[in-house]
Length: 345
Ligand SMILES: NC(=O)c1ccc[n+]([C@@H]2O[C@H](COP(=O)([O-])OP(=O)(O)OC[C@H]3O[C@@H](n4cnc5c(N)ncnc54)[C@H](O)[C@@H]3O)[C@@H](O)[C@H]2O)c1
Ligand SMILES: [Zn+2]
Ligand SMILES: [Zn+2]
Image (cartoon, rainbow, N blue to C red; front, side, top):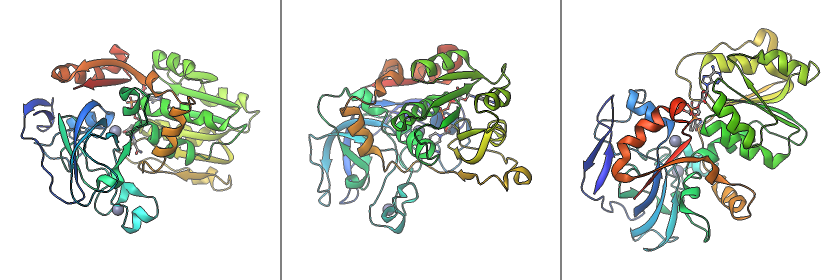
């Protein structure tokens, strides 16, 4: 089969690889229909994720058709159309029992990281019963791919950790796919204002289309001053950090109001300053976390009900044979205006 393989820092390679085989009774083999590239794949290619070793098939998102299952798989059978979760969950360990699937003792984020992933014609899914979801009929496959990772990430780590509530003023810093996923799902809770902040005017225009009530360019606008005026000096109720650099965490600390919630979903590579000399008395909460994907069934229902349209995140489509070109387009998002790119098998 064809697969996109990490070969150490640099570009990935399209290689011929043997098809994966069932290894455990709880495994399934899935034939991919559609997959995509994540910002995290770009982090791996830069060498930022040392736990991902050269030779690894990349990818942790996708939809496909079950090809075969082990004797211990009870919820799926060959021929079923499935959504692959970016998080593998055994369903039995202490963390899984708490819904913290990202910390599963025999899973978590392993696909395209510690084991071969979904940017291939076939993938082996461990703990298939806990790691796959049946696809509802009538929804385009490519829309469903957005539920493997980015929508649950924006929703769980941004909106739910930030406790977005009716009437709130919410600031989302970063209008990449993950920040935009937080923007779409924050609207479930009817906040009064959702202000999206980025450096890229195109992405800010997209944020407007996706429901932002205001947008600010932090390269040009005085974001803290504008939000101060907007809230009568109180500060925002929720600040969602979806970039992952010290400057954007610092901005959250400047704009958060008393009793507010800061939800960090950006992956941070260096330390940040925590200004307790001002925040200690402000009753704020700070939440961090990896996506658990415990909300995937809920998000599937919202898509089915027509209350969430994931397809609008897709800007480019490529045949799998053009995967390296897709990586280039996705890697130069500022020029190509790419959000999510679909790879079709
Ligand atoms: N917590 C999790 O489980 C989880 C899961 C997936 C992704 N992530 C992380 O979420 C973050 C966002 O992911 P993405 O795919 O949307 O990334 P992205 O790179 O596509 O988007 C980041 C956005 O931030 C903007 N930006 C950069 N510097 C800025 C600054 N100083 N001020 C304002 N905006 C700035 C960029 O213009 C871009 O639009 C990344 O750090 C990613 O690794 C976390
Ligand atoms: Zn991802
Ligand atoms: Zn587990």
